[in-house]
Image (cartoon, rainbow, N blue to C red; front, side, top):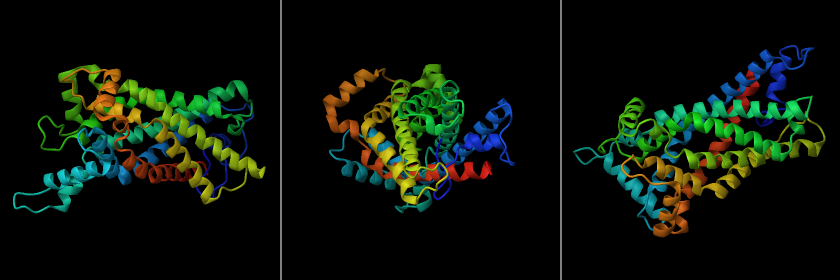
Length: 336
């Protein structure tokens, strides 16, 4: 599916897992055990990638989300200034001093559900992406060779993986969004993931866990577009040399991951803003996605749909590189 880490050979994780240590494919084709092993490798690699990326990029995620929820700042730079001012204010003790530890704690508020959500989401996404591609290959290619998939088939596989993952992980994202959106001292702020689970169920019922699911499912198109572009670029680089075993260059790896993410993000970013605002609406006032779109357009104009885009672009490029590098390294080490 995705090539090995920078400088590694282009191989298929499922194929390596199926062949085993002696590199000999089983006589009866792809067995259930070998498929399970390959999917487990994908899941562990995705889990590792999500964990590492979240720890590194959470402060920028914090900034991006706060900017998305900002409704008063006339510009993104003004929003950044206001967020930093509020951060310093809430990190100041009674003696008027700003404590570094308090700043770190505030910036990393919500990192718990973010870690749970990201690790689970990436593990599930990569596993389901593998499953959906295998399902397509089952009916189109007896060799189970990813390079025989076209862009539309990559896109379809990514959509399936995204929808499945979104439905399973949406409750975690609701809690994460609300924790980041409020300071620790704010009335009704969630003290922990467990507290968030309890409060949502108490005041909103089961439906509260799925606030923002509709735009989240629509936003799957961003990940699907990214993976489709990513895999298409990768296989283009491979086929250009005419050898499935040729090594990728650092530039080719970074180019594929960065361009695919930037293109997908800029194309579909408004859906992230809509989802975030729907999730923060704590059941105090019901508003539909359509009503919210009209409200943002009327009160904030087109720029309202792109709040936080700058912070997100700055975050997504290095985060994407980290994600896929860790994923590739982990997967490669597990399939040796």
